[in-house]
Amino acid sequence: MGEATRTNGVLAANQTKFHFAQGTPPHITPGHYDVPIPTVALLAENRPGSLKHARAAEVYIALCELTEIVGDILPTLYHLRAGDSESAAKQASKAEKELQSWERRLPSWCNIHGFEASARLAPGLANLQLSFLSVQMLIDRICWHEISSKEADPHPSWLKSCQKSADEMVQFVTSLHPIDFRGFW
Image 1 (cartoon, rainbow, N blue to C red):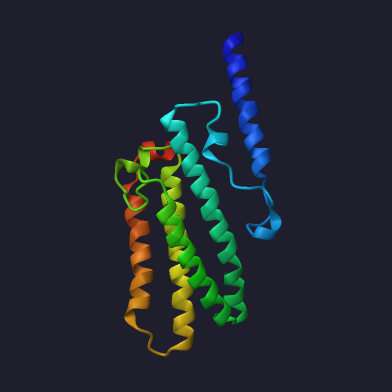
Image 2 (image 1 turned 135 degrees about the horizontal axis):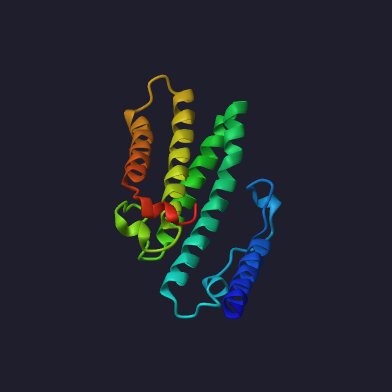
């Protein structure tokens, strides 16, 4: 019992250290946090050589980076409500480019569009996929809102993009298995 308690205590202390290091900002905006995104070396320092822990760290880092994109685009929703569609269009375009860049930087093993058993390759990968799809759908929806407010009869491709995002979300959710819910969400 002593060894198990000591091991669990070390694990709990390390988890607490990372939670405090990352902080919990009141809002997801760059002005409300100053903690840098962690590295794989930092997150997996107690598990050297563990592929599972390295991949989990890569997923966590990707979630942090995706959160930064969300933080940049959330204020756009307020601009939409205020009628500032020009600002919304610029931010949506910027966010779309950032999301594409983020996707290119993902590790090669991380198939963000694969909704099969690949979600079980690393803890949290299903969460990352759902988060990605949500951000993509949000950007598509902002673009649709912006174009439909300017044009009486926007090109159907704008609506198709929104429909594609929604379809991917449905495909992903219906592909989940009970084991997928054991990851972190």
